[in-house]
Length: 538
Image (cartoon, rainbow, N blue to C red):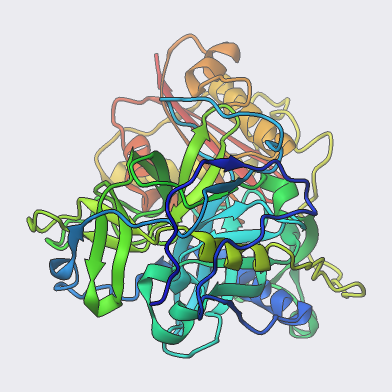
């Protein structure tokens, strides 16, 4: 690995417009960026169709990825030495929307919308890593680890079916999905598998979101060129719509390089793998974070690592590619990408990871970033795509009214909501719990939350005005004690949503809580469907 080393310098903060970028600083011979072949719009559309088929089952089934996963001796080779040296003056590129402002020091962390999962296929199997949206000229750039974008066993080849899902949460894609156009990495990583250069910047096309899911005939299913699947002998398709540019949807983090080690950073990602001792504390369904100062250099000859930097933290595989953010603002949820998770380290050799490593971002990193940040992409949605005529009543798109009030006959809830109640009580009976009664006030609270999430396009137990499920139950006139809440999105039937909830320990605990005596179920029929259960007792 050749590198021109320069003495440290004064931090140069450069405010940029979207059309101007910092030039590479002292790039060493052999340090040129390497780009993969651009993926055509039709190929990118097919990638999205692949992942969204089966009601996005492939996204939910993807496993955490690491190139040395299951190699128990890997962390034993890691050791620490002195800190790496910069190859020029420090520099930063501000985040989207933060070009002319300063960040603030914070303690309590709001998770950034820019962070999500990248999904890809290798050797026929679906995997994911972590990543973030980052500032670029066309607001369409993703930063991640090099091994999360390039197949090091097939030089110059982007991992198959590569797609970014910002804000990924429990199997949901709240801001759309973004297929890759072109990936950029460092020459030494692509050619020599030098993990000191284990970073990649990937331009993505405009995102796509699901507009509508409907049942169709077998002939329509066969003819449709988009996401489709079969279930219980029936045929379904998903109609897509353009979600716009990535940076416009979720923003983009800034970029910083040649920053002297020792600075505090926040690292974000989706850990799911086990520690070397076999313990698996994370699920990968939700993002996690850690905070610390970048420390001494990581060395591993087997991966050609001479000077990665490390941060203390007990996260596991799946965190790969997640951003290290310098000067992170809790209010704006923006900072500067100053590293990406590359390696996992058991420094005290007790069978548990206690540090993570990242390449040191220097002028050569900035050269790769600058090349990737100027790639235009655009929309991939076919202009004349023929959508099947539904054979069943369609699931409507967002509208002022998403469902009706409870029937005036005195019964509580719609037939579909009452089917959820029936399935809940069937599961409770298996566990020896008494059945729940469908309470009108809890049903109103549940439907109100489903409707609010559908109208405002979010997915959270906390309303956008800060209310909790207890607040919503009280506001609906419930005079008892609200014990818990389950929410879900995009499932088509009561049976599907119950299956998901029963396979999730936290959701199952709410359903099987024998102390609860009442339930409210509310379904908003926007696409996707939003499901809410509220449990309580009096």
